[in-house]
Length: 113
Image (cartoon, rainbow, N blue to C red; front, top):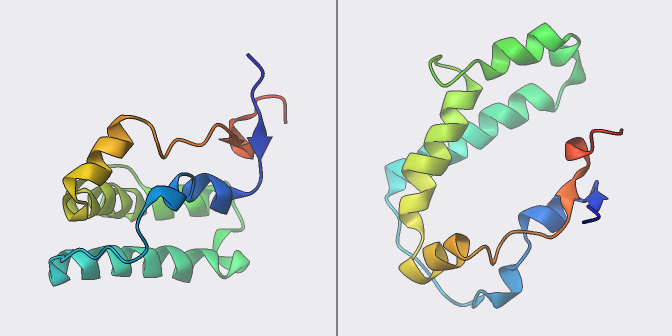
């Protein structure tokens, strides 16, 4: 099986979204939404300025692990505890069926790069 890689991460992230009704709305817990928003702001604050990650150690320190009060734990919590509870059941089913799984892989999966 040939794997296709892409640098278009937006294409990967939004794959399958055409099947979502653009007028469908959901109601979410404001505190959970703010947690996710603040997490994304923290990633933007760190990565928008390349001087903040001159060395691999800088990124390692920022990211931490699931056991640290750092970026990886924030992201993990945002996805698995906050955002997943915001989706209606039919969207959860589509995730389970792989309908949002792009056939292309991100460039960083390519071991030959």
